[in-house]
Amino acid sequence: MSSIISSTIRAEEEKSSEWLSLISSLPEDVLVDIIARVPRCDYPTLSLVSKQFRSLVASPGLYVSRSLLGCTEHYLYVVLYNRVPGGEGWYLLSRKANGNRRLVLIPWLPANCITSFVAVGSKIYGFGRLSYHKKQRQAAYALSIDCGSHTVQPIPSMRIPLYDTVADIIDGRIYVVGNFGYHHRMKVMVVFNTETQRWGEPAMIDPGIELGDTWTACVVMAGKMYTRDSNNSFVYEPKEDEWERDEMLNLKKWVNACVVDDVLYYFDRAENIIKTYDPKQRYWGVVKGVDELLAKTRLAWWSKTTTQDLSFI
Image 1 (spheres, helix red, strand yellow):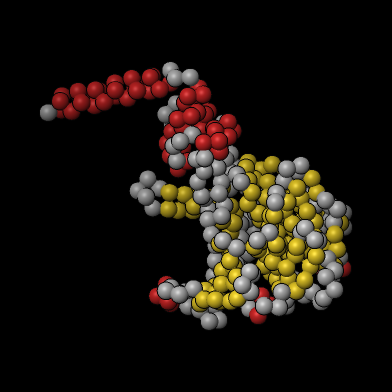
Image 2: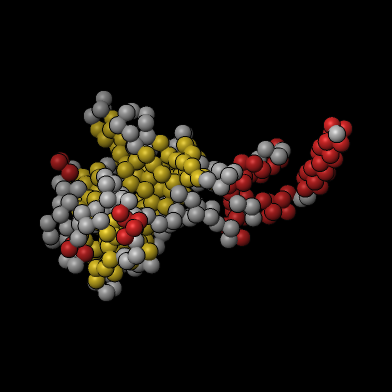
């Protein structure tokens, strides 16, 4: 019996060797085209096949091919913070071999200096500030993370340091809104062009209405940016460069919101319901049919609505 098993194993090994030799003999552009169609969750296994496969899986050209072929996938990235120094970090929601999912730590990506994030194609842009106590000055901080290689790519720093920033993107431009100056009294917006990789001039926000102390939320709907501070809700129209207060949106203290088809969704902990806001109809609604699910979150201290809008290649 053992000899039969050994013969079977040798036969399988020979077939695998022949298969690998055949695949490896293909032109590199053909190999890239084949691997580009394979789900990214299988790339760690492919990289174990040979040095050639490991090199192809790590090559930037592979992700260009995936983009051209339309082989994009949704991935969820999570940044966790901890009160203990060094406890923060980036995690990727990954699928295990048995089909289950888990958060995998990406230890080399920075987290403690970033206060707001924006996903743009296969990159994540992060903005924050760094303090230099010895020099008694503060500097703005900005970077981009390539989600194919999980490498940090520095970009020009913001021209002024901002606190409590919120950010989102409209037509390839990232709008970063934050507080500046003594006691953070001044509200400033800076714009980063993702195509030219350049910052525009900082602009003071003066909508002619009172602004609160801290920005708490920011979403984009129908080409407009909707923000909320500690007291009120505002809408910014980039084409007209105008700010105004949205009284209807201001009826609810929406936070941790997401947008689907230009409709805002957020979880109202006080009422234990998911509320929606349609800016075109200027109407607040409630998501029906999720009572059983929400009953499980009644005791949750922190909840956030989100979508798979991080479409990384």
